[in-house]
Structure formats: C-alpha cells, structure tokens
Length: 463
Image (cartoon, rainbow, N blue to C red; front, side, top):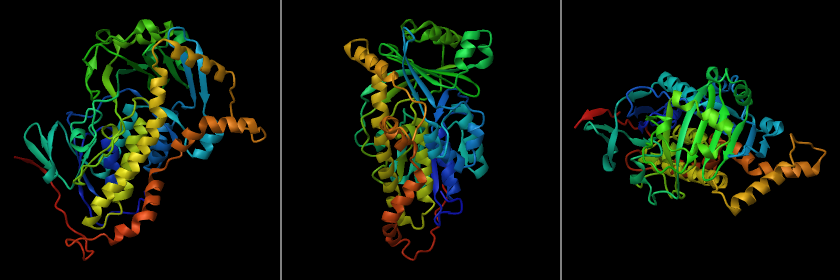
C-alpha cells in the first residue's frame, strides 16, 4: 500500500480481538488514515511462545511495514522440509526450496515465534495510534447499529466492525451463511523448548540446531517441529477423547493431563516431549470447515479476518500469512475511500479477493493435512512407498542446462510458487484497475457533492 495515500473519508473501525490478525488490521488501517479501536478479552498483552512459519508472501508485507528485518534477522531459514514415519523415525520425504526460487520471490522463508511477531505488530499499532480496550469480552453484536455488546453490558459502536476473534469466533455464526460444525477436527498442542534446556543433551542439541521443518507422520496423529530464534517449537495434532482444549489458545495445560499418543512416536520425539511438563503447554481444537461462502455480513458493515475468516489448518505454511494478507487487503482498499457510498463496494471487493485466495490455500493445505494424518492401513502403506520412491530423486537447485530437472522442479513447486508470489497490494491494484471507475461514480444523496463526510468517532458507553 502506498504510504502516502490516505482515505479522504476516515472511518472508525472496531476490531474484536487483539491477536496477530487484529493488530495487523490496526496497523494497515491506521496507515490508511482511519481510526481504530481494538476490543480485547484478555487483560494484558499475549504471552505466547509457539512457533510460526513466515513464508515469502508474508515477509514482503512485513518488509513494507518496516518490521520484516526485525523478524528475519538471524532467524532460521524455512527452506528444508523433512517427512518421517512417526514410530520408526525413517525419513521418507525431503523437500528443499531452491535458492533460485527464493531470489525470484524477493523475500526469504524463515521460522519465527508467535510472540516475536505479536510484539512487533503491537508496538507498530501503538506507534500509529491504536486504542485498546483491555478486559473487554464481546457477548454479541447488534447488527443494525454496528454495535458490539460486551459481557459487562458496555456497548462499542463503530462504522465497521472487524471480527478478529479467532477460530472460536462468536461473530462468525452471525456472518457466514453456510456455517457448519466442521468436516475435520483435531486437538492441537504447542510449546517451545528454550535452547538452554537442550544443551545437556548433545544429540538433541545437534538435532534441533538444523534449520528444517520436520513432520512425523503417525497413525492418525502428527508432530511438527522446527527451530526459531528463542527455542525449538513443537506442535502436535491428534484425535483426543478429552474435551479440555479451549478455542483461543489462552489456557495453559499440564502435558500429563492430555492424551497425546506419545507411544506412537520414535524415541527422539518422546525425549523432546519429555520437556513438556516443565513448560507452558497450550492446547486448542482445530476445526477445518467446508469453504465459506461469505466473510462479510449482508449489511456490509461487519467482516471477518484471520482464523475467524479462514477454514484452514494450524501451523500450515499460510495460516499466519493469511491473517496479515487480510489486513493488507483492507488497508489497500480503504486507503482509497472517498465517499460513504463506496463502503459497500469496498466490502464486496474484500470478500471477493480474500475468498478466492482462501480457496487457493485450502486446496493446497487441506489435502496435506489428511495425507500426513492417515491411520495405519493400505492407504498409509501406499503413501509411504510413494514417498520413498520420490525421495530417490532429489535436486538441490535449478540448472538451466538440464531440461528434465527444470520440468521436475516446475511440477514440484508450481503451485507453491504461485502461492508464495501472491501480493495483496498488487491484487487490490488489479481489482481497482478493473472496477475503480465504477467506484468513482458510486454516489448517494448523502455524499453526492463529493465533499468529505464527517463521521462521528464512536466510543465505549455503558447502556
């Protein structure tokens, strides 16, 4: 988004949820010239340590906001992926992101931690003037007045309400027309092992020092692990018989109280997980939905972002990136706002752009989730054999003189190159080229003169 472009008509945005999705929206919309209030249920800043993946399409946005280098400096690179059989540790797959592709994408792929990105976005949003209402949990929405009603009875009113309240969003049911319970459910745990705890275990210390994303594929379960600047991040997915995980990552759990199937994994995983009882372990329920048909309310004043808007897997390549892309898209659209009558078209544009992107990511990532979580049986055995065969043909980089190699790499990376090359600002620019003239002619009685409209900044009031 052009840093010089500001909306001619400033609006008051109310963002429900102050995590990465909410903070990203605040950063983008404040830069676009709007006013932003975040309504956050927690009483203080988040203290999460889980590991996240920063693909090139995300890092380019953060670079544009001036914080990308702070996240990527000395961060482990996310260019090597390894797949292992959970109970034996046999490596059956390896994928390396070629350096030539990284250069063409204009940004690296790195590992980070949730806390690092959260802190950078929080500081940037505060610097740009965000207002935050801590300890404010939303109970419901009063749609006709664009008002969020808090559990305390207070009311928060704005011109546009953004639901950034995660996969357990209470707003989503009021927005999405085809909301369902989900087609795929898993329990998910995460924690981060500080490096100093691993120093006494030389083989473990050497294992975690390698910059790679390791996926152990088990009998209906998966464990993902990768280094970051602060430690070694662990994410486990399994079918739990318990109902103790919340939907907001806010509660800490004793690892021994969870029913993670430790016996299905090789000894090195069991040793890594032996640190869990000493650390903060968070657990949630992952629900993968069928594709949503809409993410904007029919009144055109309420929209969803981040995990509230997406029906994707946790700790995939793109779930954090999607939240920040949502924000960048909103900022790039609403920095062009001149008239009140354009708001509905901006909202429609956001929905159209982001639903297309979500469908692209859904196709790429959901199949992977089901592929690596197969229960033991003929399909799993066929998968393992196919991966072993593919592992025999490995290449480290492009070679212009080898046509077979170029074709192999093209087939391997074509879909992901397309995903990594996505540019939220450029997508809005292309949309504007096609539809911008219509936006300029949009008018209603209230702003037909073309003069800026003063819209009162709403506030928190006690009903």
